[in-house]
Length: 293
Image (cartoon, rainbow, N blue to C red; front, side, top):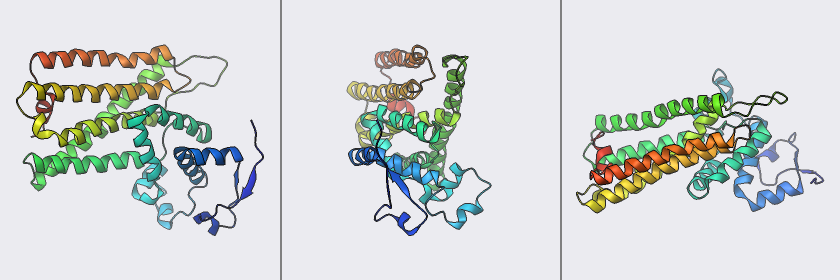
């Protein structure tokens, strides 16, 4: 299907200040943008990135020795926060939509991974705030205690995330790829594997940092019902982590779907651990927090 392009400036946009900017927008794209805020945000980010930013500050060029991804961390106006929060909402409601946007990004930018660090930066900010809240609530409110909690949580998110991303990146490229001698060879990008970890981590953060915190007095009680609810919360969070990770690799067209399905197998192991914890009356919330406090 094709549409006749029309040219024009975007009314009310800062880009109007630049006479050399001429944006071609098809009628189909305009309709898609009006019907889907997420696609509109993705379109805006793609156009912004394709021109290197509508108005890059001078300090951005002075950081030229850094990759663009890290320069945007230093200069936060370069990050698209609206698009990031849209993805976070989708991860809680319909994670497959996030990977549909990823497929669209690959078609426009020829890469699967995000080139915007906003998602990682926001999760790090949330983890810092959550660490302080837990420290105050559980009696570790000293400056050194709070700093230790922040570093541990950031280390778990970034450090373990890099290890898991590296393992899944190696696994997918070594065993899951479809081999075609007559087509261009494609590989999973390491940054995309890390993006999948970040996507899967966010719902886990909501469950094990926010929901757990709200019900902390009950979950840490000695009753069997508290143990049951705490263990169910943990098993659901870890199972959802594996499910979102599975979706991330399933959407890659050059990976074998039957092989990617094996990434769901750890959920069965989690079920065994869940039953074992219930039988032994081990409260997952008390067990986990005992390593921090």
